[in-house]
Amino acid sequence: MARAVVASLVCLGLLGGCASAPRGKAPAGPPPSTGGGTAAGGSTEQGISLYQQGRYAEAEAVLSTAPGGTARAYLAATRVRLGRYAEAEGPALESLRADPADPLASAALGEALVSQGKLDEAIVRLSDVLRAGPTLPYAHFWRGQAYQRRQQVARMAEDYEAFLKLAPNAPEAAAVRAVLDGLR
Image (cartoon, rainbow, N blue to C red; front, top):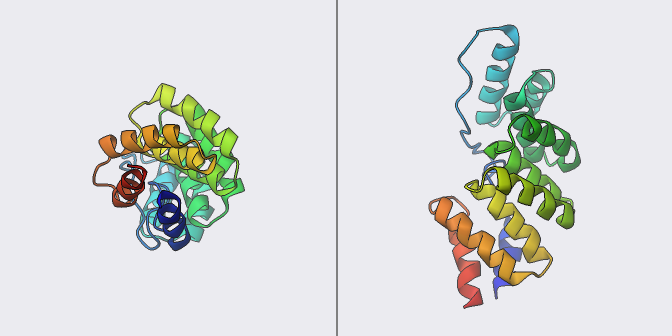
């Protein structure tokens, strides 16, 4: 039952983290930086704005040259939205080096790795992220996805329960509850 529910939701594109809200609805993410007004800061703000508008190709063009961890996190999330998962890994890791508990970068990295079937790497990297930021809901969500695909049900359930405690109203919450209810 649980496997069928998640398989259906994955096929429908309803499961996703903050890096991949339902198509056409980009999550707000952290507010753009307002400091400085420099060209680099402006390009980051412009890229974030384009991302939030769902204009991913344009956002990628702007963010690919913008410096800083925030720009790298949004670039990773943009590439996830474009379905270019392998290309999302590098910027997500760069952002996480700058801020090991970046919520957007961790979600983008998790989705990128799980979508490519790099389940063991997803588990290791997201475990590292969760040591730095144990309250990152989408790090739990994507590690739970990796555990589920590895058929490690107990660990999946732990991560999904943590996800629900941290993000009870997230778009994925109902689907995660259905999976957990299917285990009972």
